[in-house]
Length: 420
Image (cartoon, rainbow, N blue to C red; front, top):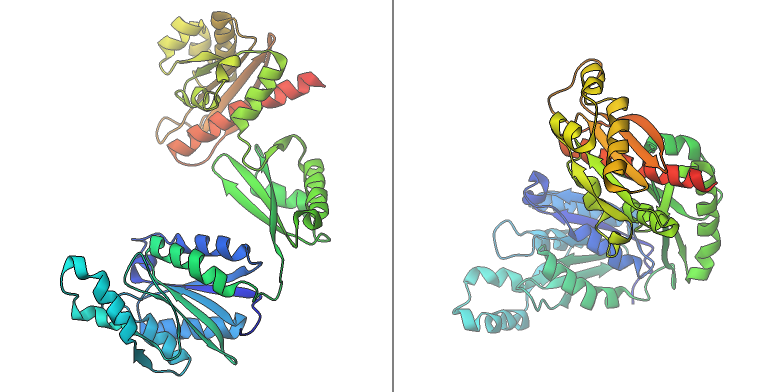
């Protein structure tokens, strides 16, 4: 059956991957499938379609981990040299497999005569295990040696790779792991309004005593913290994960708004629905993003009144009742205007709560006092206004997305404060 496996490295092969012309989705697929076996991907290396570099990468990966999966370079063209490179690593020649060639000929029957160039796809390292490809012409291959380890070769096209991996390679590897019966269990906390560096500073080494891995996953509008424990079943992992979540919630407080796939807009919606409140929104720089977020979930009419996109100053005055003198004295991007926008949408809608946002999304329009990325947020909850000035870095789309998230977060925190 071969040696026990504890981890696997991936070697992705292709000039198109290095140039950026093709995005490599295969590694994520492989990692997910291997985790079901209790195997971790230890490293990923990307190399060009060059035999010497492929051979070097595979040899190094085997020396470190004893197991490697390659993707790509199994086609019929001159730059498809993975078979030869791996054969070289294991000191084996390539042998022509008549059965593979006959299968290729049969596959081409409807298309006409098979090109002679496809013959190379029937050449495999001597003694290799073959995984038939029912969706393409390049079979998957596996070569193993007691001293070197195991190399599995998979085609590059994702639909072909995934089918061979799931249907044949995973069963082939099953039961060979050095961590038999173990798999990964995860919990994810979602945060808003706190930088990744600030999370790391608060966290320090406070989870180091727990048997789990911690990953920081920064997104445009927040930062996720993912904790992974490896165990035979969920109950074995639960204690460590529960303790980690408890510590993180205490450390990060109100910045944690949910777990797993929780969406901040839905969290806000649930708070509003639970208290029988409606919300209206007044949006300038976000131009409807907050309203869109709040209405993504079915049943949002329970808590969403509607919104007004008041991009032009005249719209702010005529639709929301923002005072001309407020705009002239403080400018459209100001605490005073944001507050009057929130008051105005509550007055016009009759909603008990409101979110208002006004800012400079860029790339132009900023000044020394109000640079691009400056945003004023305001919320109303039962005639009490709360305002905050924020600065959001990034592109125009990033500023707008972060401003929408910020407005939702300010309403969430204000509602939670009222509940105390």
